[in-house]
Amino acid sequence: AQKVTQAQTEISVVEKEDVTLDCVYETRDTTYYLFWYKQPPSGELVFLIRRNSFDEQNEISGRYSWNFQKSTSSFNFTITASQVVDSAVYFCALSTPFFAGGTSYGKLTFGQGTILTVHP
Amino acid sequence: EAGVTQFPSHSVIEKGQTVTLRCDPISGHDNLYWYRRVMGKEIKFLLHFVKESKQDESGMPNNRFLAERTGGTYSTLKVQPAELEDSGVYFCASSQGLGSGLAKNIQYFGAGTRLSVL
Image 1: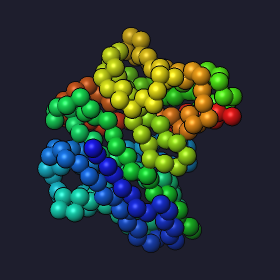
Image 2: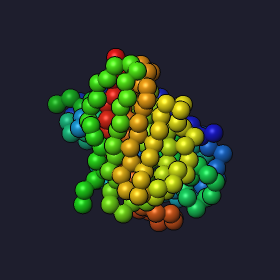
Image 3: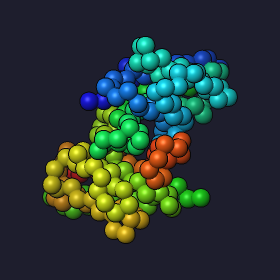
């Protein structure tokens, strides 16, 4: 069974602070995908990043960066110089990709979500 | 290009009534998923369509839930009769067809339908 844990329920920071959202996962699959989604107040889940299990390179996109470490089964997300617009619920998720086979491919297993509030 | 559309955005019904949620996926997306988030808990998988066929319905809570995707386009999720514990936010997501490409394994979500059963 797959499991994703986001231990931080809520985080509150002041604008321009850096903040890291933690994500720890469990899976028996050797091939898998990890995702981060953002849910702003409007409600839809916005895709941020996908990382596959055989690519441990860290990724940076503007103020966002992701640290994937298979040794600790973690996929942490850092926002540098946070802004008020970053306030949202952030979800980490895990899936088994289509080409890995099985009958449950593609479905996402989510963490509980972390509510991030950035104060001006 | 239009995203995933869900309606209604909010539905309030009484216990025992029937409610039908609708999801219009991104045009051309073969895969359609339903998920549910109950009261601040994690978002949980309900079922997965590939075109009009149910690929995986292992997450459906019970037989009061019926999902359809006639013609492989939009999908409906009917709850009949609704119970108090069915309250939550129901999300729909879609992704492109099978394969290993990046785009084909990314699910795009709608804004969800918030269901309140009183």
